[in-house]
Length: 203
Image 1 (cartoon, rainbow, N blue to C red):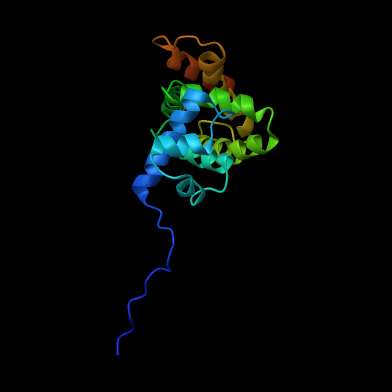
Image 2: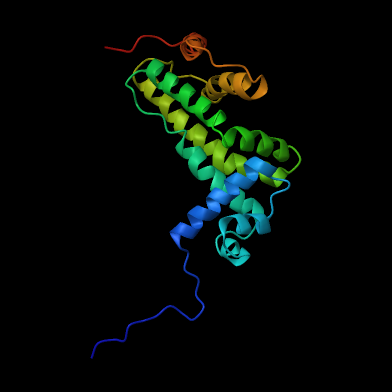
């Protein structure tokens, strides 16, 4: 005798992907328009066309929701291709950072989150864990490949190198609000390679 078909318990929540996507879009729009401090679960639910319970079934708090929604596309944007050369990888990484910082929504969201994190240690730690560290881990892979190819010294200070590569574009775009004129990325890449003591790839 076959076993009866088992049904989910009455009232069990099914997390529909289309609703999750709608909520994520609403979170990003609310962050871009109003900032983290003024964002509310009520406003996100209204914009997404769902009840607040749909949000709480996915995330237990506003902070967890924001970090989850922001981290997914942000970390994905930090996955540079393997071009086969350090200069090519650095150029790809610089372009990726610039695309992230100048994105129509993220260009407004990121500075706000960074400012809020200066006043909220829990938010600062969450941003570092879910966004900062994964993005840096991907770039460490770029540096490790260059060391293996003989393009960078084995004793390279990877943490300092990452600060150098990301900081140059961040300072120009987010801090100064300066334009990225033609040839900028090539000049930055060449300067960074000199600072990192890069050398030609081993034959």
